[in-house]
Length: 38
Image (cartoon, rainbow, N blue to C red; front, side, top):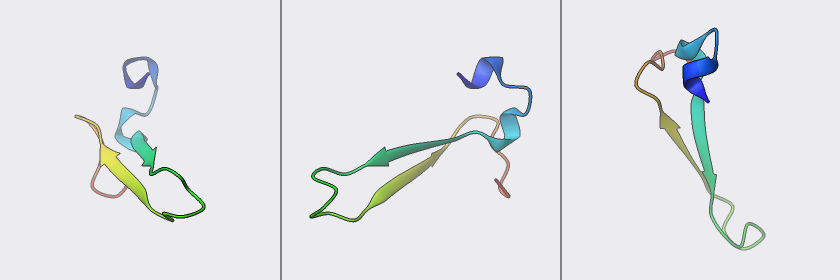
């Protein structure tokens, strides 16, 4: 997906832990070209 994005520095990945109603946690990951300010 990021390869086709115009602003690759703003791409983040997210992973919601299951079951979300019991574990209110979201993992956020950076891509190869993600800016530190994204």
